[in-house]
Image (tube, rainbow, N blue to C red; front, side):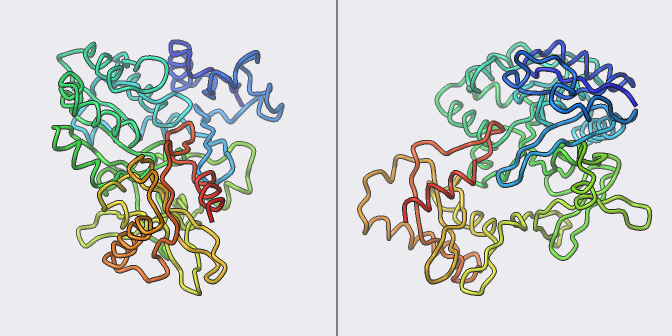
Length: 398
């Protein structure tokens, strides 16, 4: 057993040193938001005495909080982190310098630090404070010229860069300067991806989670060493990047990780399918399937369909209660374009959404019945939409 130390993610030098030591067999590190670490010692025992020590093979603990699930503490070994980082560099064509745009208490941010450590190159952090296109461009301008440039973003960050690039040539040039921009954490809308690629950005869509040491499927194909299968519609992942489990929660670990014929698999809880070309296509979350009038509807599929409409590229679809059907899809979109629309105009928008759902081959039960135009989309700290808050807003507008 060895110690587990909590380290504020905002203290970048300290976190980098702690991660380097952890990869080399030293104490494991648990990056936490600065606010959570204020006034506390760095030992995990400040939170739970049972977490004073961890197994010798563990290097990193990442606490995750999804849009619907309770927080969990994912425990990752040094071997898993290194396997993931090396597979990423292999997929991208070699090591390079990374721009750090996500905090180190998220797996995407922590992996930027791990990749940088293995490459022997200092990561370039984005400026403190809210993410801005100008700040990103300024940081990018300081990167080493003779090595490949990489960045890891979530879609909302990419959207800000695309909007900034449309107005500012400096931002557009910065976006084009990267050899690869990994985008993950949630689905990347087709419209946003097309706009980014039209600007010259080299986008790589990534799929994975903290439980897989970050993204492990790039543009629909698993990284070297990663195993991928779909069982009864659920995506399952295996290979050397898998987490050891959930810290202090053996029951949750047993539910999420299974062993078959000596191989471990992680049950993602995502619905997916393999295309004829062998690429993974995510259909949504298994726990986001509703039964509407006796018909199963995957909200992820509805979301994919409506995001193809102009103005709905970042729309969020959630379940809303319905007196007749039990539940129906509702749509929320961050925009001012629909502000002040009358009932007739709203019904026309809903008719367009229904037509998009029909065109996607989804059942009539998938047609949205409620639409909310929000000034600002509620989001988690990770940038993902806070679907619980969105659902509450739509329910309140019944």
